[in-house]
Length: 62
Image (tube, rainbow, N blue to C red; front, side):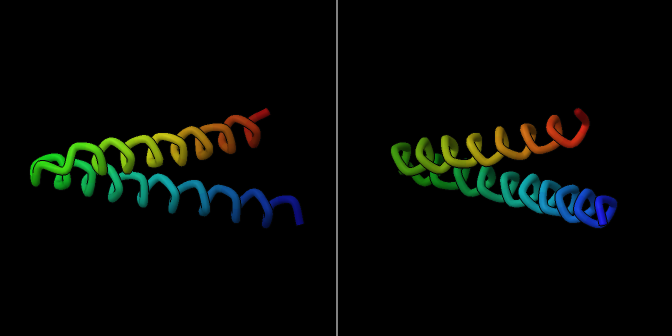
């Protein structure tokens, strides 16, 4: 049971990291298009998601 839960968390973290990459790509496109405020907001939210993913990895390691 614990192994299955660890696998699910690992897969969820991996998916979050992939989606964060997509959000950062979107933020770059928004900035290139001249929409700096929205680019900044998207980047901020992406960083929060990444921090949560890192926290999950640390919690699993401990």
